[in-house]
Image 1: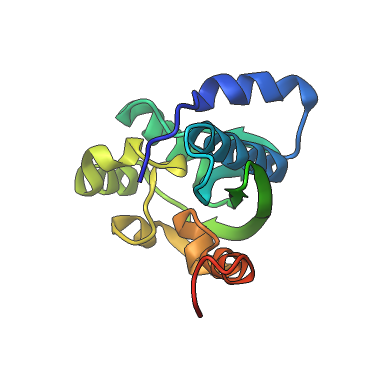
Image 2: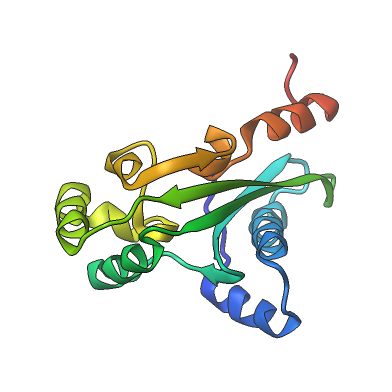
Length: 173
């Protein structure tokens, strides 16, 4: 696995004047990441992926601090949002497959104490993901309803990716 060289916040700022819908922002970020790695590996199949949180049409980034995480959780309390997860597959120097999948999540009403207890339990991990939660950990306790594919919520629409890799004959079955 190689690390991409994309400054995600800078690219988001560059995309902002184009007023892309959040799904398109996720797709653009995934493709930029794939391209940044593929440039150095012309014979490889490269997968780039990204996820954005869409809160009422506003794209959210990962919180930079626990205090910013607290603010995000307070805003999400009692409300719904969408996660848009995207991938792009580059082979032979061109995008051969791409997809964006979305999930809708409803956060239960949270008290300040609920948020504090969650932040204490989750620790610094809250700054590593949009919305300040990881569904596969303590974050699942924040929700009252989830609609969508589990892998999409985790940040990679795995089933469409596997289908694309089979079409490209990059995996055998």
